[in-house]
Amino acid sequence: MNVFIKKIIFVLLSIIMLSCGNNDTQKKDYIVDSLETSQNINALNIKGTQNKILIAYFTWSDNTVVENPDSIDVDAETSASMLSPGNAELIANWIAEETGGDLFSIKTQNKYSSDYDECLNQARKERDNNERPALVGRLNNIDDYDVIFLGFPNWWYTCPMAVFTFVESYDLSGKTIIPFCTHGTGGLSRTIRDLKNILPENCEVLEPIGVYRPEVKNSKSRVLDWLRNLGY
Image 1 (cartoon, helix red, strand yellow):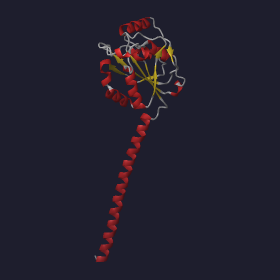
Image 2 (spheres, rainbow, N blue to C red):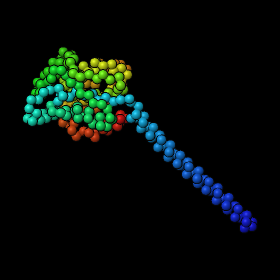
Image 3 (spheres, rainbow, N blue to C red):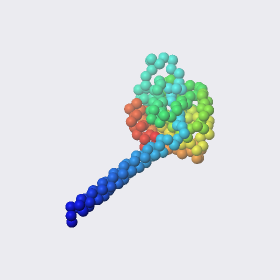
Image 4 (cartoon, rainbow, N blue to C red):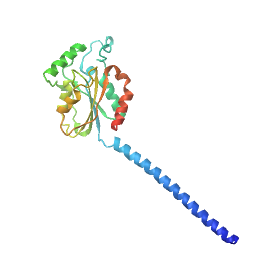
């Protein structure tokens, strides 16, 4: 084989090898682009499908009157605070920061005592009589929301009756409800069961979170992990 033919073969082989290398590079680029696109789509599916998110919550601090706030501190035994932000409000704020949802505080017309024991006595009477305390303030755009985070303390092993007033004041059909609860040693008790009993049957209730009252202020990372596990 003469030198000229050898050169031609060498050039042809070089072209073939370069072409294969470019194809491999293109394939790799295509795979990377596809993975990135898939991840972006998944992220959109997780956080972008809801039209709007509402974070409604009931907290003692928004439903009592404190005459001398400077003399009040968190209850030493119950870790329940009558000063804003209350425990449920604190969690609600973290959820709003993470999801961009709108906050709404559930407030009663008649306020509860700023003495915790008296407040609970009033709450027990409302529970025993299955009362629905009248509320102040109303959402006129509830239809805009697909997802409602609903927060409250555990009062006498169930939700505060004002939370039931809120739920029954609107048509929540087809909405996704995500409860969060602050509690003492009783945990969630009957809160979620009782809540489900008054919600429309076609509501989807996602996994709730319960946070022990003395641990609320140090529970932000746990709350955020819970949100991310839910896809928010």
